[in-house]
Length: 363
Length: 138
Picture (spheres, rainbow over the protein chains, first blue to last red):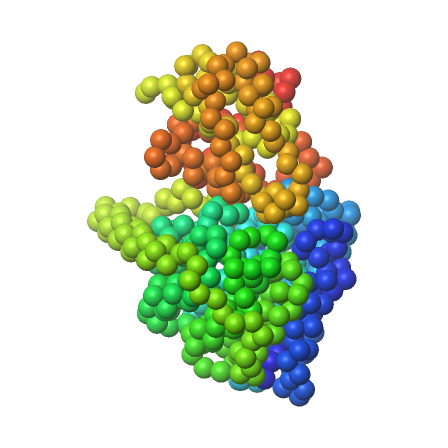
């Protein structure tokens, strides 16, 4: 069974010629329709996230100013990110859709949920929108689960690093954040040495790969680097920042995956879930409409219909060595941080140091 | 303490970043330091979907106008958000020892943007100078 949460953003939050555009939702929905699921497709409407839900991950001042800015008509937040008069309403419904999806899965105790929303979220920091993102949709859902005592795995295979999600859960030991992404590329974070704060050493896992990397490289990252960490972590829920901009047709980056690769990645993510009804995929990037449609169908088809994807998976691109290096750099960074933590503990001093690469204002 | 030998300036072609570059060049001339002009490439610019807002020739002209030898300017384009990019140039091999950024004049409320300069102050391993807009620098 597929639970479709949303859609949000089919018409609102329209930046004209901007690549993060309403037509993306129609393309994703067409991908869902291509599965012909019949009664196995259950659509649940999104609702606006409550302020308390948003405050788990965003600053109140930021929320107030974002709403006010949107109500006044909006404008450009930065060189990449826009706000319109409908952006606030779309963003809070996008953030609430994940909560609705979780409730639906808790009720059904089976199936997979797909949150078909925009604006996307994984770049949104506690106090700042950026990278096309205003509110961090996957983080709002993860934080709600953590508040109920759950351990949450977030798998982020968007081609860009989810700096906002990493920032939000940097010191949260009950969230394991795993990201594969092109490097170098915006936003410039996501090095393997970024492994989490002193309260959550190892709970952030980054595997950057070079331009031209193929699907087998990302699967290697999942199998050799992520899988051992996931097994040790023992997630109760798996949330996926499901960007499709690593597709070879995408205009914003240079990985060369096909929809077949996303199907394989989805099977990996599904295998991390401890039981049926514990997997939620959130639409993030993906800016070529046909690739978005094909990839949505392949990803969800692999999880709920056991369908073969229309494009074969890819092999042989660069990045295998980068994956092995990432594992090595990660291990070293974790050892160094653990040594520092032991040293601090021995002095009985409070742990207050802020990582140098962690940006944004304090919460 | 010794004077910085390597100064990095965030540059996006805006008036604020030009003021920062002008100030950094004047300081570098006085100290005999080098200046690394750093441009951060965002999502749209990477894809060729935004007009290129920065030009190396313009940066070199600003530096020359401040009386600094152009040969001591290093032009550097890096993928990423301005904050993370500037932190990176202050780390690793041959790191910058001083970061210089300008301020933006914008209709967007300050609380919405976060702040590159405040973020840098929080995370940078080296001193950060925030230069006010042109006309306010002595």
